[in-house]
Image (cartoon, rainbow, N blue to C red):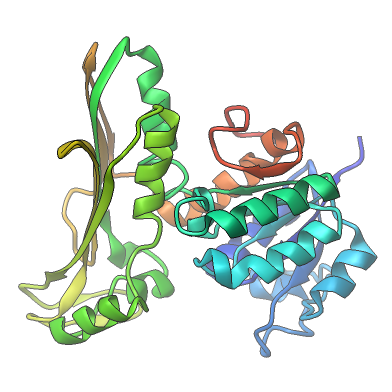
Length: 332
């Protein structure tokens, strides 16, 4: 059986790892690589993931040209978090006739912040005969899809709570910067207020859960607070002094008539002890799940993007959520 052609669009840490995994996958063919970062353009993509031999795939900043030449079946898209920002990229991919699986956090449930643009993208995807999906590990799995899957054995669900405790010191540098590691508390609050840092996708996770459970929320609230270091902390990339920000405590709450029906919490900071993920359902029967050490986000995000491909390919055209595709699973 011929391998499925895949183009990697975006070659940051997640995209580079994705390209590496696709290159080694027996059922997939890495057929192209796209990025606008000047130091990467023109290089063999294998250099970015330390492939001993050249792949013959040259990183290009000309997306339309690559897509028209390669004609991939699927594009793995890993660039930015904002749906509005990546919309032109997604439109370019869709018009080329390729299905898209993207790590853009707001694409998990784009109807929340950008309903009109989401409807337009859905119409374009249907007209082009392709499917588009936003997914990942968080959002995309731990605090939304896994939560919903857990409700399948419940006759009644009254409320949902999910939490993640993540040691950001074990993660990639962009993520450590994203959660504010090493900043002063004042700078942290300033950047959060400006919308230039912090976890993205908390509200989307709450909205996806509510949509999946057919619950109408009166309000979705979100808080982002700093976790302040009480001792010197070091990672492979940076150092955090006592009194500086080690990371974030991010919460998302879905309210129904003033009642907290959905409560999500993310503590992601350098030095977080006893990392784990947990799901608690006030349900019949009650459900309590815990993943010791937590799902390691960087590799899990890449795996989720790749493992959703078969489910995406059998879906009807249009803009999809994780509720619209068959349950993804590892394929090799």
